Image (cartoon, rainbow, N blue to C red):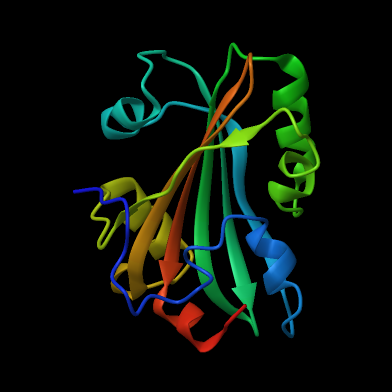
Length: 168
């Protein structure tokens, strides 16, 4: 179940509205690891979250690491038929953050966050297992949209317990 506000004692990084990676870069050994970056189908659950019953999506999965430890697994989803320019920019991000172009474009508006305490998504579990990450290390999932007049981007960020060692 998605909620609008997480529990009171949550790490301030989890509720930070601006570029999270710009804050995390201050710490030692910051790294974005590209897991996948391709045209792909998504689960029916993710389609419901996205709000459109399309077949083709562009999906980008990354692991954000601090001190050689994963702290966030992030999934970016946009409908494939959307702007070729947007898809091209997402493909060319490689190991750079989504925020490196989203927060520089004033025509994207970020939605309010929704939070979920646990995420038992089987696809997520498979990806984390491939990366040798125990899915039980996820303590909260954050969902938000970036909307412009012609594009919609769904961002799902899964925060690992390790993030609690860091602050803004």
